[in-house]
Image (cartoon, rainbow, N blue to C red; front, side, top):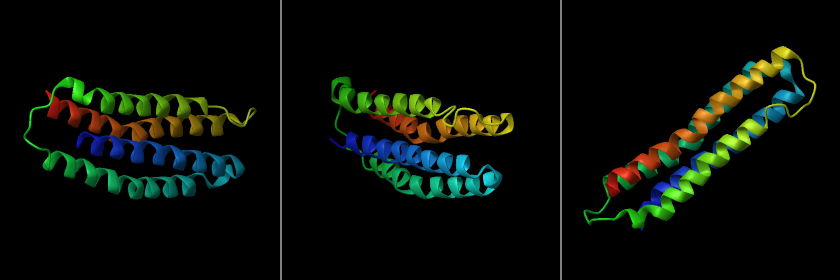
Length: 137
C-alpha cells in the first residue's frame, strides 16, 4: 500500500508541471516579447511544485517496510505511473503549434520549451518508477 506514495508523488509532479506548462505557453503566445520573464516564472513554479513530491519520494523510500513484495503488488502503481509519463509526453508534444501561423523564432522557442517540459514533467515519475522497482526487485 505504501507504493502509492510514489504514485501520488508522480501524479502531483507530472500533472502540476503540465498545468504550469500550459499556463506559460498561453502567456507566451499572448506576449512573445516577454519570453525570458515567462521562463523564469515557469522554472520558479516548477521548483515549488516539485518540493512536495521530492519529500514524498524520500519519505516513501526511507520508511519502506522490510516485507517482501512481489511484482504483482506493484503492477497497478507501475501502470498508473506509466500512464502519467505517456500522457505527459503526448500532451506536451500536441501543443507544438497551438497558434497556427506563428513566426519561426517563436516556433523554435516553443519547441525548445516543449522538450524542456517533457524532461521536467517526467523526471519525478521516472524516479518513482525506479524506486518502486528497487523496492520490489
